[in-house]
Amino acid sequence: MRDPRLRISATILLSAGAFISTPGAILALLWWLLFTPRLKAVPSPRVLLGVVLMITITALVSEVTGGLGLEYLVRMLPILLIAAWAYSDRQESELLDVSVWLMGKRIGFDIGLTAEMGLQSLQLVGNDLAQVRQAMAIKGIPFTVRSVVPVAMNIVVNQLRRTEEAAKLLTVRGYTAGGEINPRFETTGQDIFLTSIALLTFFTSFLAF
Amino acid sequence: MRLEADIEVGRGDFRLSCQVAFGRGVHLISGPIGSGKSTMASALASLIGYEGRITKEGIGSATMSLQFPEYHVTAASVRDEVLSWGLDPRDVIGRAGLEGREDTDPFKLSRGQLKRLNLTCMLSLEPDLLLLDEPFSSLDCRVKALICESIEAREGITLVFTHERSVLPRVDTISHIEDGVLEHHGAVPDAIYRWRSPPPYLRRTLDADVLPKNIRLEDCMEALCATRG
Picture 1 (cartoon, rainbow over the protein chains, first blue to last red):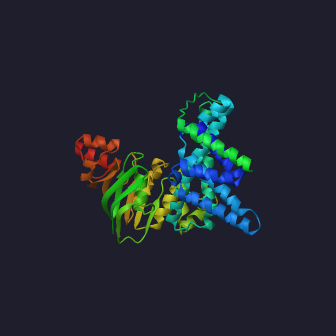
Picture 2 (cartoon, each protein chain N blue to C red):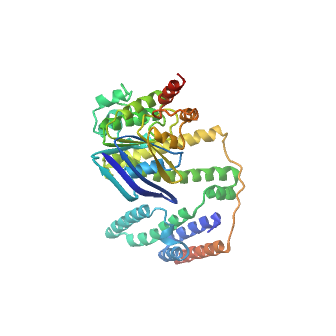
Picture 3 (cartoon, rainbow over the protein chains, first blue to last red):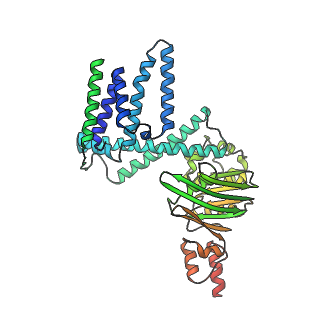
């Protein structure tokens, strides 16, 4: 999808649809199967697999203890897959563009900038983690549950340092609040079609609730 | 002692290849920023995947210093950080210039201090194969010179991946990475002629039709003085 406004809308509609009811979750999964490159669109299959595993364990525990674990799993799976697709399909600065388009050049710019910086940090965390794992391999320290604390400490400290540098940079450049940006979007027929199906999924899910 | 590599490394669309052999001594691998020096160093240290073959003869121990020293930190104090390398803090901390900072959090050191601490630890380990990724970044000229002395004094194979242009150690061979290929220029001093990006002082020496014995500033000054009487 080329228009980020419609992609984000479709993501929200499908996620909400999947969360509201099980038929909605099945429809959202079908949407993902039919209209996305499926597993090719997953940015990090290992990370996704880890998250799916965590949710599966939670669901199983819930099911065994008398909760609705299976239903929870069916609802969460399409939400995760659609989030992975939306993340891999995004383009640089589009959150800033959409935010400014939606909320204007002051609050919209601030929220968009924060969102962009958050996503950038997410990418950097992946790199940090890979580097820390290499450093631990060099020291001969196995990457186990016991190493979570030093690894997390390393990543948090690096993130805080980068945040401080970004804040200084914004201050030096004279940033106080808001900013000037004129976003432009290209909407295709496919964008409108896919968003309409997502809207239909949401309403069907809402009616089935 | 010998390290031979005939490998290709991929990083997204970027491909990097090398066909090279390193014996005992100090080997410089230069290249511009983003040319793939860190990737190649990680591959040669077998820290990332690669296609092809790396052969290590007579190499019993190997270690690598990452470009950013923060990633190496696993302990909450300088003393424990040295201990995490299996070293005696009493020996290392003084040589790293950190006397009295034993209880300091490594993250509270400046990047230069942390870099020096890491390099001192790695050099103290005396591994057969030592890969140094940008060892001179964040260091002042005095400490760079000290690190150069320690590198020169080593017994095993030392690979120095750097784009440093002012303070360099005495080296045995020169290689250069550019456009996805590691090009081996051979042994010094002949390799100096083939080196694509020598530092400015070395370029000026070569422009004066003088070939120094090695790549350090002292070597160039000595060669120029000898020529001019």
